[in-house]
Image 1 (cartoon, rainbow, N blue to C red):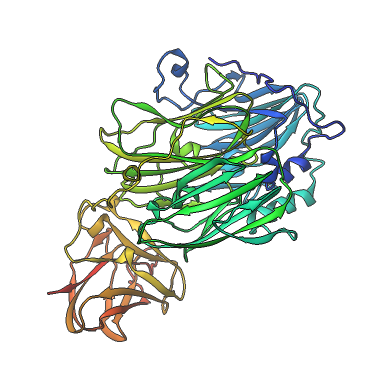
Image 2 (cartoon, helix red, strand yellow):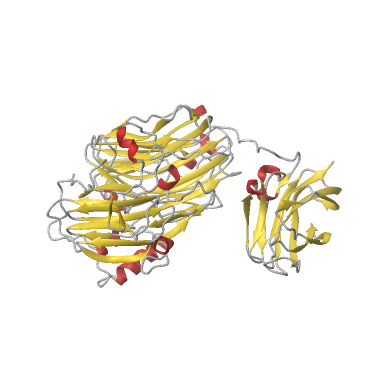
Length: 622
């Protein structure tokens, strides 16, 4: 068992006269430039990891309900002495009452689930929130002498991340009676808004060497094409290649760009990719994009301000394979390196050939030659801030699941987590591994991009891989109707109300093409959804339309290119089931066609009254 108290590992103290406080820590939550400078603290994670991992079983998986100890009727999740700060709390199943004691005083008593849901002031979104079934709280609780986190209910999965400052560091402890409301409001607004462009920054061309000293505060690309993973982004600082990754993976949206909005990285639907991690340089910097001969187009620019914001260099490096065997179990090296720096993020792309869950593996992060990791997790999805292998997409300032194809966990999944408030400093070395713990014996496509800042000359084991290590054909669906134009793949032109999105149908049984459908929810009678699909033929044709029926689905009217082809169809049924395809006569255009679904009402048997709609596919009948 690891010792319960934090061990002070950094000798550096905060600058003389500066006190660590709730206000200063809130400012750090959006200050990416501070990551370019040496830290005055260490960081570790308390978690419910299986304690058999300390006894020679590195892949033990009983990660629930393990605590430091039990005090009376309370379970101790985390405890430390000396100056420090709690910076993150996560749980997959928060229950009971959570208490935080700072310097032997109770400063927080709250319903654990409500706290991580963002229902407790001042810890509301985006500081806290349930994301794909995982409860998260990113908020600083500074302590001068000690901290203790307890819960009245056991049998939970949890993480508590905490900093430890050097002895003698001045700390103003967190107090609910002296909350810096203006600082809280500033941090909340800054996490919700796109960072402002610095007034002294200027646009520079991509691919041309910059003369220093300076800092690249934004890398912005407009990228289109089907072969973007064959393209790569390379960053050279003062003659040292510090970053290399396939283009989508660098921006944490591999293997193909999808929508993402986090504090350091964003990707728009139009193909615009943005990195906001600052890249300081003293003498020179060069950002290049390596492109395939065809199949990809990239245009971009850099935002540069004078002066290097810190002595450390920005690093990002990709490691990947298309044939990672899940048996025997193993550890995947995310980042192994020597030198001083701090870990600031991880992106992960998985290509899973089966529905079964691929991510039972724990993160293991050793710093400065630790024998046992000071950060030991409870599952891959837990590291990324969600839970229960949920396929739901989400995006928050520090973490996201931007893609999960399905059905269930089959296909491509794209994840990222950025360590900003909870960055992990190291003085001499870092060894970050992720367990490969899959429920099935199969071969995964698996790729990680690590982001870190480090001193010049930092040594790491990663290399530029051959092209065939990062390319892969798409996985064929387990079941697909020949010629089907999948509803979930159609472009949504307009919805007068509600949300139209992909829904995994595997939980409802078999029969849906691609094991998914387009699911339109949140609309009412009279609302309409307009979709478009492509046709290679034109003229009078027969179109097969496959809809879904369910207890809370409505009545609909369907039109194709302005022609009503289904006057009214009642989609109510006692259970969720795919309807037999219905064939209708249509006038097709070669190229883009319009499919319009209008809700006309609801069946009186529907309880509750429902207006939802499910579209499996359409297909042209030869």
